[in-house]
Every structure is written in structure tokens, then in C-alpha cells.
Amino acid sequence: MYRILYIGNNLDSSKTNVSSIQVLGALLESEGYNLRYASSKRNKFLRLLHMIWSCIWNSKWADAVLIDTYSTQNFYYAYTCSLVCRLFNIPYLPILHGGNLPERLDKNPKLSASIFDNSFKNISPSIYLKNAFSEKGYDNVEYIPNSISLENYAVYPKSFNTIRLLWVRSFSKIYNPIMAIEVLIRLKELGHEAELCMVGPDTDGSLEKVKAYAKKTGVNIKFTGKLTKKEWINISEDYNIFMNTTNYDNMPVSIIEAMALGFPLVSTKVGGIAYLIKNEEEGLLSPKNNAEAMAENIIRIFEDEKLRVKLSTNTRKNAERFDWQSLKNEWHAIFKAL
Image (cartoon, rainbow, N blue to C red; front, side, top):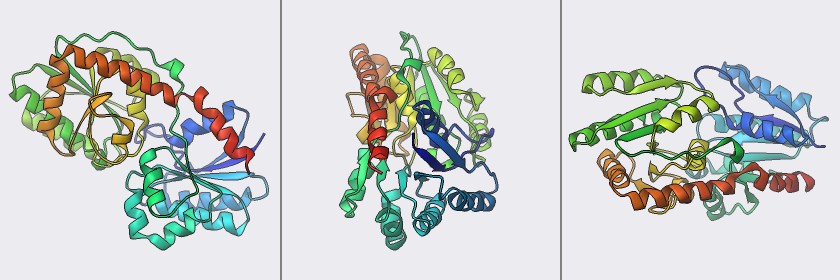
């Protein structure tokens, strides 16, 4: 079986959710692939050095290198590792995760071309990014969505005697957790009894700001901190609407998981979200930073049984597209073509 070096943020701490390198890596290993990883170093400079060294050290061992590629600072990790891969003649495949990568293509066209024109294949988990890259002339992009093991997600009936919102993400500015509080406040202003549970680690200090804002405005929120997948799936049974408030996004696994659990969804319409959630079919979308519009969408779901049954049924059906058993052959085909 193929030997794969996987480059990405393989961190395991209270400040990070499970990353794509850990999810996809484990799935590939379950298929018999031999994987090595870089990097779990917490210091960013040491992490970059470890990534570079891993590419060099494994240059004769690896059949290919997977590189998780984001639009922010980690973009330069991908750029540097792609240079090393070319220097040592290793086929590499960037996996496009950053919801703001289209802006990066405009901002750094030469660096982008250096990475993406010279790759064996660029893997896009979303149609949104595949289309954005195609518009810039990149025709070597393969669409393979993020995967889940559908068997781990059971759908339970949800009661709608009150509004009970679930938010699952890292507490980070780009995911706009403050908006979740604003939505809850607006619901209460409109006379609705509502609860909010926010699940996830604090990555940039946003959690304390959110807690302070909740205290200032007098709303009670359940903060769980970081939970394992099994733990948050268990508590999800107590909630009935899944809320996503992000300012930038691509193909978030948390939304795919919420779909698999049969949640009706409300989300901001940003990045790849509109490609993932069909408005009025699998969820209700609203402009970013518009708490009033999102609150109105939540009320629509709460008051309209026919709508929420349709959304819940469709989200679960849509989630079936992301089951690993349906997608693993696409990865097999990629590696066979090396």
C-alpha cells in the first residue's frame, strides 16, 4: 500500500478541535495506507522546521505528500513544503481548506501559482473552492468532500416545546461566536424562550470575550469547552436547531456532522456554505453579522413543523454524500494515478 507523508497542524491540545489531518489520516490508515505526520509542534517556527525536515527526511520513503492548505498564516507552510517537495521530486497534493483562499489567489498570485500549478493534484473538499480555482485557470483540481463515518451518527426525534440552539466550533474571531449571543438576545426580545449551548475550545481569547458579553447582557449560556466527538454528539440530543455564525467558511465538518444528526440548520451565507446547505431545503441562510435575520429564521423553523421536518429529512439525506464508504474509492483512484 502507498506511503503518505501528511503535512498539517497535527496539534492535540485543549485549544484545538480535531483537525482534518487527524480525521482523514485515520481514515486512510484504516484502508491500509502507511502514514507519517508533521507536525504536532506547538511553536509555529518549530512546526515549520519540523514540516520541512519531514519532507526532506521522508523524500525517499514517501510516495506522495498531502499538504493541508489554508488561507491565513498556514498558507506559507504549504508554500515552503511544496518547494521542498519539488526540490526532492516528491508528488504533492494540497488539500484546500481555507474559505478565504480565493482572496489569497488574488493577493499572492505568484506564490499561489508556485504551489498549485506544480502539484500532482489539488484536492478541494468543496465545489465553492473548486469553482474559484477554475475561474483563476487552475484545471488540476479534484473535488473530494470532507468525510465522516455515517454509522457514528444516529438521528433522534427532537422536541420543539422551546428553542434550544447548539453551536459547535472553535472560539475564534473568524467564526464570530459573539453573533450567537446576539441571536439569543434577539430571540428573547421577540418573546421566545430559548437556550444556547456553545461547544468548542478557545483558540484566540474569544471565549472569554463571549462569556463577558453574555454576563453583561444577562443571558445564560452553557459553555462546555472542548468535547470529544462522542461527547458532543451525546449532548446534541438535548437541542433542536444547529447554528453556524462564521464570517469565513469552506466545508466545515461540524455542519456535515449536524446534518448527519438530522438537525435543521441556520447559518450565515459565506464562502462554501451555500454549496453545502441549500437554502430553504436543508437549512435557512442569512447574511453574515445579521443576528436579526438569523433569529427570524430560527423562529420560522420553530413555528413551522412542516418546514423543520423537511429540513431535518433533507440534511440527513445530504449527509450521506459525505460518508467515507462512499468517498474512499475517490482517494484510492488519486493514489493509483501517482
